Image 1: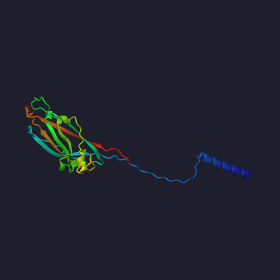
Image 2 (image 1 turned 45 degrees about the vertical axis):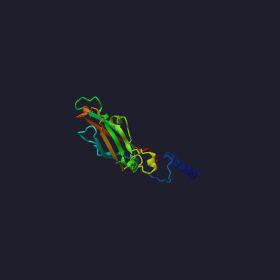
Image 3 (image 1 turned 90 degrees about the horizontal axis):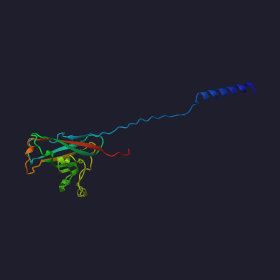
Image 4 (image 1 turned 120 degrees about the vertical axis):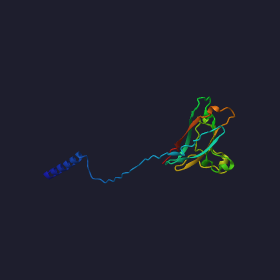
Length: 210
C-alpha cells in the first residue's frame, strides 16, 4: 500500500474516532412545538338573601310567621342539591322549662316556588318541608332544590324547574312558622326565645367527560 493510501485511511479512521468520541453528532431535521395547558377548578358559591330570614318578638301561641327568601348560585358550577341542616338553641328566661320550645314551633311549609311552576293551579306545591316541628327537623336533611312534585303535575306539564340550581340562577322560597297553640298550659315559654340556625350546604353535580 502506497503512502497516499495509508495517509488517507489514517485520516478517515481519525475522523471516525472523533465522531464516536463526540457522541455520534450529526446533522438532522427537527421541529418542536410547545403546548401550554391549564386546569382551572370551577366554584360553588351559594348565598341566601336575606341572611336573616326570621326576626320576630312578642310571639304567642297560635301566631303564624310567613317569610320569603332566595337561594342564589353565584358560582360557575351547577349545584345538584342543597342540604338544609337545622339547629337551634332555646334561651329559658325563667329557668322553668320542662319541655323543648322547638317542639312547639312548627314549620307549616317551606316551598320552592321555582320548582312549583304552574303546579299551584291544581293545588300542588313543591313543599320541601311540610308540617314538621323544629324539634323533628333537627333529625332531617331535606333537599331545598329538589323537584318533588307528583307524576300528575309532570304529566300535565305544570311542574316547575328540574331539581338542582344552575350556575347564575336562583330559587325563590316561601316559609311559614307557627307557634302551635296546643290548648294546654304553655306558660313555661313566656319570655323564652329560640335561636334558629339554618345551614344550607350546596353539592356539585357529578363529574363528566370533558
